[in-house]
Length: 82
Image (tube, rainbow, N blue to C red):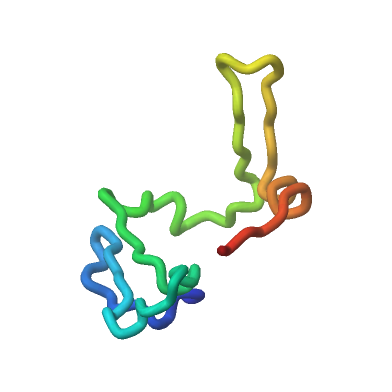
């Protein structure tokens, strides 16, 4: 949550953070002011491991299965934050 440094942390187990009301006066809420809320804990493996070897697999009711690495996601798709 380092990119969202203006948020007020309400809890860390599970993660729960929100922007103070005075920061929400924009017509469109900037990315860094969006609330963060999780219904469960961050898996320990996510905290312990480097995501370099992780993959995203899209399969099932699709014409062709797709497997993407973290590097694929970073290089093949535009980073959109607004």
